Amino acid sequence: MTADPAPVPPPADLPKNSFGATPDPWIAAARLDYGADRTLASAVRDQVVHVATAPERDRVEEKLLAALASPDARPAGRAFLCEMLALAGSARSVPALAALLRDPATSDAGRYALEAIPGPEATAALRDALAVLAGPARAGVVGSLAARGEEVRS
Amino acid sequence: MAPLIVPSRVLGQAAPSRRIAVGIVGCGNIADSHFEALLGRPDDVRIVAVCDVDRVRVEAALARVNRAYGDAGCRGHGDFRELNRRPDVDAVFICTPDHWHALVGIDAARQGKDIYVEKPLTLTIREGRALVEAVRKHGRVAQHGTQHRSMKRFRDAAEYVRSGGLGRLERIDCFIPPNNRHVGATWEPEPVPPGLDWDRWLGPAPWRPYSAVGCHYNFRFIADSAYGQVTNWGAHYLDIAQWALDRDASGPVAVEGRGQFPASGLFTTATRVDFTVHYAGGVPVTCRTRHEGGGTVRFVGERGWVDIARGRMSASDPRLLREMQAPGKAVSLPVSDDHHDNFFASMRSRQRPIADVELGHRTTTVCNLGQIAMVLGRRLQWDPAREEFVGDEMANRLRGRAMRAPWSLA
Image (cartoon, rainbow over all chains, first blue to last red; front, side):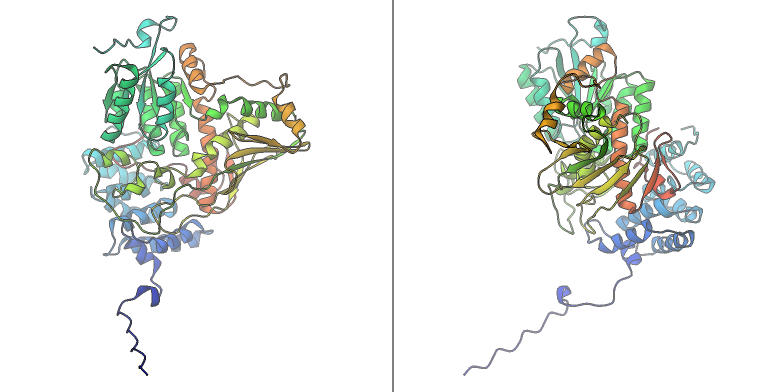
């Protein structure tokens, strides 16, 4: 009689058969990469589009801004968070978005949200950026101001 | 030697020998049917320019056109602005991904070109209104590519419904097919293939790295570019609902929907579409995914129902179909039996075509309303005169979107 072979120990990292703490979807959304699983970002989207009250929107906006400020934020994650702020952002989001707007590397993401946020704060941020941006990024700002019904000399 | 192509405006509107010179922007999937139709026409129309951001497609289109004409008279472009500025081009066919329609169309109108825009008219409601305004401002003819308007069976149905053939109309059901492509929950960025200008392909859409499954054809399943079957097929059948309801210059007053969207993966448009728009007067129009049977529009009235698709018709009672197809109904609608013929005739007459840009915008707006309601998952009130949602700021923000620099509607 032959003894049963010893069971093969599982590898140290076996995602399909292991589990851990549920990741914070807001942080996971900030760390999103192009092509990666975006299930947790979709959970964030669900929360954003279903806000029903002003306090809920404030809470969601706060979480989006905190995620956006994460040092681990990736380009895809940043673009996603700005897409969400285009839906739920208010004047409170403008300073963080204005900082993105003024950096050519992140300008499109910041402007995506700023163009959609009503109010003079967002308009002022776009106008202020005209003085520091050039080339395509500046042309984009001119277009966003026009989309908001603002007159601007290009 | 290339033939001399004289722009029709040089010869004047009344010149009997006038030949219309066409440029085609976007040489992929949907352009194929236009190439086939235009190259098969008599000598009244000639394709003189083709444009695509994929050089492989430009070269294939050039070879096809020049082979058909037996010369080298057609020229290729990688930038639509070059084509739009050619003085010998009279009409521009816009066959690009949806996120480009407004920009190419507005530029063409500003350059004095007439326009044939594939459906949906534009990606967003705001873009659609901007395109309508540009067409009107510059006095251009613009045909929307909802060619059901030029098919007798759909005209018959619209006339029949408007004439009260079904008695009191109770509802209209539009069925659209499911997505015909699927990709998994993750995807890999890939090197851009030689000849493709990926940055220009993206244009106003948010930047993402290239992947083959996220480019040609499949753009329609990525919400940065299109709204899936809502706009791909919904534009056709919702268009006939609008026609039958006589709402070509207006639209619904409310919308509600529950769609299913993929939680991960490159594709972001609804895998199951289900929304209802409500018109003043009380007739609901539904739009739903149907996995068997394909696309169709079904009119339900107190006398029964008729169900009309491109390739077939059915009814609760065959007598209704006979009545529907009989001449002499109380309401007669403008007749067009060929969408291209109608467009070119409108160019010559300077009259509005059968699928004028305004009604194309209104139909595309219905698609957008359904998309927005499904994304938000709540009932929305819509003011078709002001083209804005009532009391829902988030929904109103979804009427438009910022374009990636340097592109804009300005």
